[in-house]
Image (cartoon, rainbow, N blue to C red; front, top):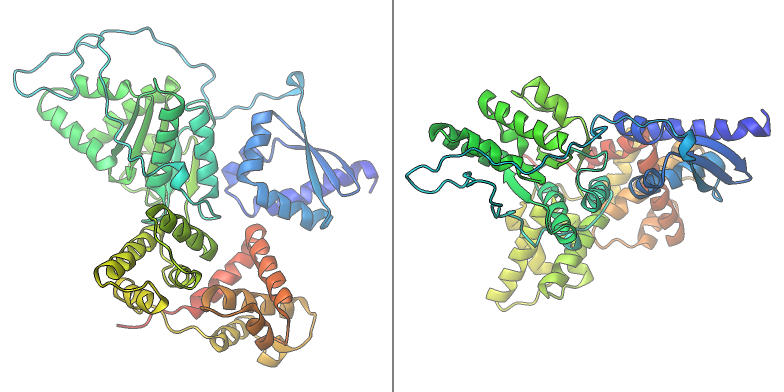
Length: 475
């Protein structure tokens, strides 16, 4: 292989790793347009279509890129960018980016004012109606803790707030289980847009509220007013879009969607499931949900849960010891909402009972909230489970063998001991796992974390082992 061909082979190797770890649509959008230019020692230079393109992949995929090029080139790997000259750029065609955004002159909306109570959807002439954005100032980016579980959603949201309706992320579709921060990110985008663009009309509603409003408008013969109301919105945030059930309300929403999207307005949706898994939705509406960027929010890891608790305690002016914070972060693992509820309850118990907030009180409170839903996890349990999963003996794991399977099993065991066992020092873990020092354990945990970010098969091994270790106790 010539030197001129080596950079192409290296970048191709990187693409194979990246493609296995991100959504196919995002891979096609953000990585296929990149061209390898040169490889000078450990310095890989690639060409990207624009500055915005470079800024986005650096924000959304920085860690993945860093780990990937290090795997392909070595620990000293560096990635440099060249922005493609305008005359050399290919047209980037994205379904969510209209080729032209039509601008309409202000027009009078034909309405009639009923004799009864004033309708919230009636627009007298062309008077600009003041619309309550219905945003909770608590749900701002400043109060949002970023982690691997929500990084892509946060980065996309910040890009949108700088240029609503003008990014490829239109619509932005956030999905995931309850309490993972979908509403927080969606509202944070709206709040940031209002701060940057005061003239923008932002509206937050739920899917169920939209459906109820549509039904009320239908019964009162005010559908024209209803549609006119939503067509005046610049940024529409619909929370729990999966609740928008019913062909007639979906048809009305389809018309609203088309009008806003074609006029360069921003659409943001949240759901408890991916667009492909939505039931009882018209296909034409589902296809529009998939136009922009779909982001899955996952369960926060230990570091993110700990950071969230620290931030919330600081915001509330509550002093908590590291032991208490560590206990809560390791005990309450489901979602952010349950973490916040546990912290609130802990503070309430301490205040009303005139008690200090210590680990003993934290154990009592979490037991009442999350229950004894997990078996007691010990180092012995973790070691035995990892050995069983990789079909190796305990002696093999604790030996000095450098076989890849043995080394990875040992590293995963160290990682799980640190992640799942309370108040267990790195030195203790190393002593139990072959007499290693704390630096070796820390290094092993870092390797496991990095591999989970770049190797979906390795990540699946870790998740499988965690599922075997943390078993729900039968009622």
